[in-house]
Length: 175
Image 1 (cartoon, one colour):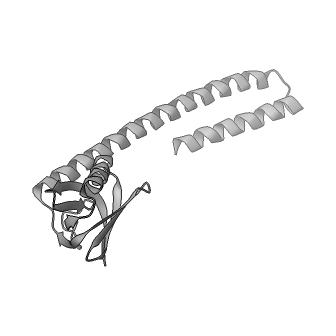
Image 2: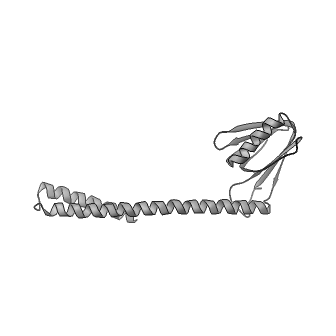
């Protein structure tokens, strides 16, 4: 039995033969293990149904776990739980290295991931800045209220504790 984890990158259907090409999602220009796994199913049973299901896997572009448990069966399971078994007269597999198009796809995927990380970080930085502004405004209001009470009074002590807490929030948010 052989198995592989990656994305279904390509599906070819000639009617009497399916060829599925999976590519590892990890970008390593010098991988220690072959990053490409190609499975060929000769004379698949229920080819129309299987082809439609494989096309769906391809369109989802999900991380997949593929295995070849026997000489007549292959199995795919997506990261989201979709499963498919394809049977045929013969199932063969081959491990190989990246092609040029794989590097292009991995670069696009890496760029998209980086852009998403940038958008997320920017949104969080903006949110943090807004929170710091709110804390500063609250500090000013509490300081004014505290000044209206005598030193040692219960109200003044509570306001000072509140100011201490707000100062701690600001210190933590600056880290």
